[in-house]
Image 1: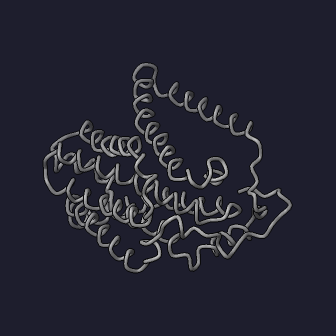
Image 2: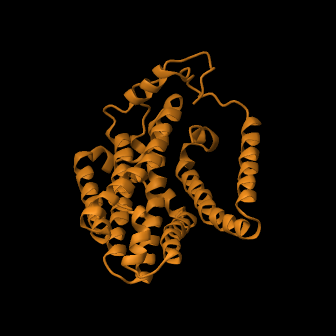
Length: 295
């Protein structure tokens, strides 16, 4: 992620982000399907050994890549460099918005932890229904990714993120409120597609706003949000469900997500108005090193 602008050029960042989403969702749909076939035929052990082989191949390809130090020198990795990356966030409302809007969506907008109980109590199904609920999000994401060519023509990336996350939030109560499974699956697919649009534009803002020498550290913050937000969301939806029921938890979470979008749009106008023209070289640049530091 940190070297993408150097590989494709800044004018192709949005397209590269869309392509990355296609790869991610193809893997998300085909990987579990392949694992199911392998486990059904040969058992769990061979499935894990295939995974070991796949990771080994990825590591081999990584080792064969040449070093790609940032063009502005970067900073040698360490605690000081991590703090430097975090300090870079201060006062940069548009960049902060990419993280805060995703936290809002992940914590409140998708009650994946409730899928088993919703499948049983709301939709009257079992394990197959749970699988359909999960796969609908992935299929929607894949469809959104392969049809994302239009994103390269959108200039107002911040506004696009706000609309996409609002769509994500609206799809959640629409999926959980009725007890009609086909409608729920369509709503979850819409949520998955909305998430792809949000991810493409959030990544565009991140890549164009951050100088090369700090991009790896800010991408690390991004990954922490993407990986940690859903786990916090699982806790939130479970706690609310234990108090008022899973259906109310899912619906209220989606409505809070939409309200959070409106609040962030008001509090972070720089984020809402962001276009690539705002991606001027930031005032704070990393301290040049001897080139040993990475992105």
